[in-house]
Amino acid sequence: MYTQITSSSDASGLRIGLALSQYHDEITSKLRDGAIQQFFDQGGKEENLVLVPAPGAFELIATCKAFAQRDSIDAAVALACVITGETPHDQYINQAIVHGISTIICDSGMPIGFGVLTCLNLEQAHARAGGEVGNKGAEAMAAAIEMANTIRALRESEGGE
Image 1 (tube, one colour):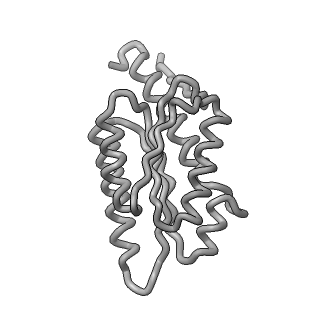
Image 2: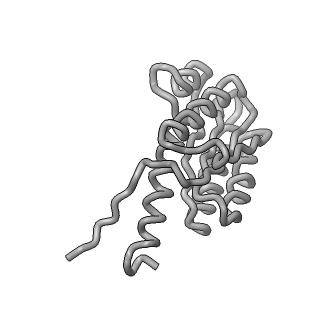
């Protein structure tokens, strides 16, 4: 017989770190608002949300690592917007962010909701920050909450240690 671990979308009792790039603030502020609203909609309490602004997307790596080093944080959410420009700069930044955040997840076991938009233009970013494609900040928060609950349930299950 197998054991099935079930998850929950209940944020009550979870402490979430929210790492927010301030670059492209007209986009990231909408991602932030969507993430915060999702946290509250899922039962999270204001005192259990830790918002840390970062200058840009690349700096989210250090912020998420700091969250992972705190026992009081159950999960993190990384929010940013990187838009393709005239050079391949966006590709290097995006690859570094994905590598950095996935390394933190693997090393620490702390879930990190990935709400980093990688868009070709500003119109695509607006569509993903509360426009016709939804709000990727809210989606990243929902994923972080579910994974924090899944990991907690797994650790608390018999034999899950």
